[in-house]
Image (cartoon, rainbow, N blue to C red; front, side, top):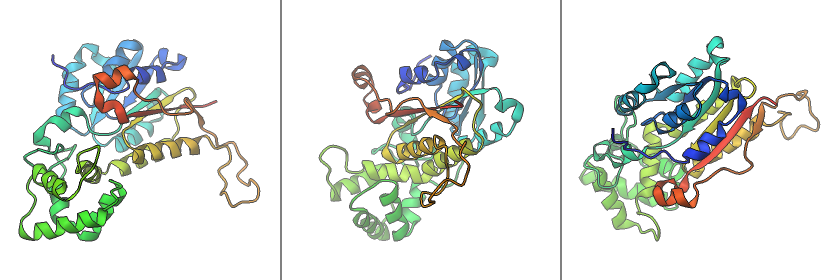
Length: 313
């Protein structure tokens, strides 16, 4: 079958789970299954491993199910938001003890991005950007219905756009006469009023809208909070691939918190918590990035970063 998506940092992901605990077998949760590239490689590399894939995109699940059918009972999947599914799985004590790894590849797959019907790309005929097409909120509702202040917040917080107020104001004025009906309409409009020396002028705005539509940062925060409250057993590992600084910052902060032995407020003169709160350690001091050969094969890997954490001492 034709494989429509190249998984990023594949070798680095495989290496991050190269541990005796995982080699012996157990369950790994692929929180962003997508089209199954990482899961297939992990199942092939670790023959004693079982994987539960999680995704909210029905199209991706259907493809992955067919692609991974040869692995039989070693692969299963659940549809839904990964923060919710992971919380439910970890709440089952018998299952929790079997989980030896968790992988999350945050962001949009190249297939979603390239499929114009999904409304993620600049020349798409609609303005959608939903990963789960069963949800109601889309980019079209945000652009045409959110207030000036709400648009400003989205463009500033999720797009880190310097001229966020100008952009929001121009959009609100434009839609008074005619609503935005497609991603192409919006990208052309933005390119008309803004310039960028290196990327398409609408790149940051589209990123901000996509994050807002899918609540991507909120989802990642909830996921990290679950792992902080219900840590995995000793030797289990978590690997997270991010694609922009907003996501990476959340992961970096969470890993740093999990390494703290003392959780007292920084203003406290001396420790009153008693210590002993350290959950484990980071596997790498700095995030792993794509090497030159991968960048040539897959230019979209240029912004990918992998951070990994091992629970227990």
